[in-house]
Length: 382
Image 1 (cartoon, helix red, strand yellow):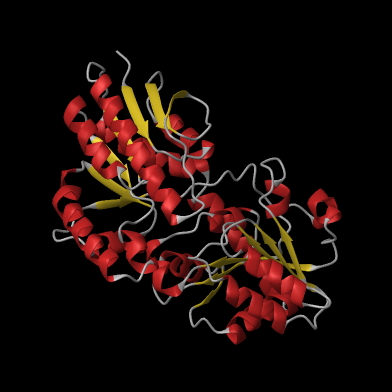
Image 2 (cartoon, rainbow, N blue to C red; image 1 turned 90 degrees about the vertical axis):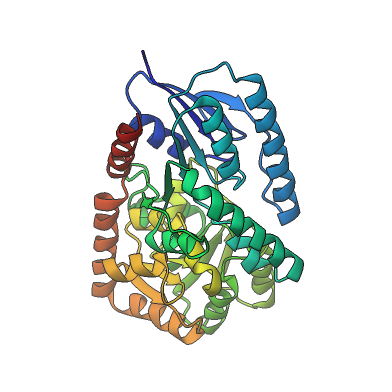
């Protein structure tokens, strides 16, 4: 009899669906409850709206109501394993309910760390009190989860720091498709041709420009380095700080900044490979709660990474432990400019980091490597 697995995540990218399904036993029946448009046996749930904190809360509530109704109507089903992702974070509660109803092991990928994210973003006494109660719930219930997973060692430490009784957490990193995302010579890159990047030293920022990303420091570096006509800052993405970049371009007479929205999936391999160096930006006080997935996309394209990070977070450890670039830990524009100029001026250093970035990604974060971690995990619980 084939195994039956239930995956629950209001938002889930196709690549992650592929990693999970390829790691599960051959012939397994896999149901996916999600609001994302992905391939597979999908049970559609309310879609996620990340445009504001209020819209996120509304989506979490809609997802919770949907799951309660779905559980009530599907108690006669059988599952051998429950796998849930922390998007939304109410899935830790949902997963425990599913575990109880279906009497199946519950594995939880804690990708977005709550309530810590809320507590750091919203400095409000009432919110802080609410987060304290949330931490108490986590302390009581996390130990009931059969296996907690997360994406970095520092993130794992951050989860345990705020619960009463420490739990065992497995770290499985974010995976990247190294066959799709890879180095492309600028002379052969249509994205570079279209946007005039072939003769530029491109400092690339690609991803969300939200509250948790230090876009201001990158813009300050662009202003400082605008006398060098060879260096161009390319911003690709969306978010609350998108308008900051637009304003910076408007205020410069001769801008050294380009700004584009998120690119279509078929363009992504070319846009990501357009950078000579990639910048990954975190807000320093929140850096221990995240491991930005864009980092692996950049390193897959053989791009040195400059991380705007803290003294101790997963981005900082990745860059420094593997010699992939520079960790800017002091939020100082001079430090950021020095890192960019060093890579611009020292071609040997640039090329060494490029080689290390690609090699490290192939050895540690390629789909085939990460899938082995999941296979070992699923074998244990199936």
